[in-house]
Length: 308
Image (cartoon, rainbow, N blue to C red):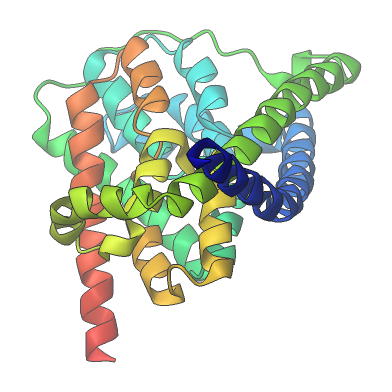
């Protein structure tokens, strides 16, 4: 009888989670496909390269070679993986790789991720400004407090102008298909998991366990599960749960806004951090510097709201 009851509760979770998950999946597919196609066109016509050249003088003040601007801009509009692909051609030392990685981690996949944050309660323009300025401020600070100086060599960056449009289109279609397939599986699985954990009271237990961490970062305890998802899976893949929680009223708009100010610069702290570490970055510098920035952002936001 007990097993039947558990099975029925899980079945109810499946039924309640499916409509919302499918709605969010369709929304994400439209956003991600449209944005990535537009960025592919910008890459092909050299717009990304042109923006990178404009930013070269700025990046030299961060202790980075001019070509690092291309990696940053690619990550800014697309994702961490495109930035990593460029970084592997730059012959960066640990110090420079860390600074550049922190910039990318703060402000990658800007359009898609900021759209998610806007849907869960934050200002789109504010999130763009906060993430971009945080990336540049952290680069400025790290360049002054990290030991050593840039010792990189020549780069081997290949311009997109030399790639046939058809080949670039095929490559984009294949990458997009893989990403969408993975996203559909993860988003549905995470939405279902969230409903099951909530049904059996596990989310409340997680919130109680993480309460000291939430209080330290200035975050409401009810956002603990969302904080955990964002830190392990990131904003894009964790979007379904965040949107679902917001629509159900489990967390308020104000609570989501505070969380967004934290995770906008500090999310996906497993896979992305390990990958950037693999290509030369320092794990602790990348993690702790962004945690420090997120701490400042949340407490500043709380003070700002209190003064209002």
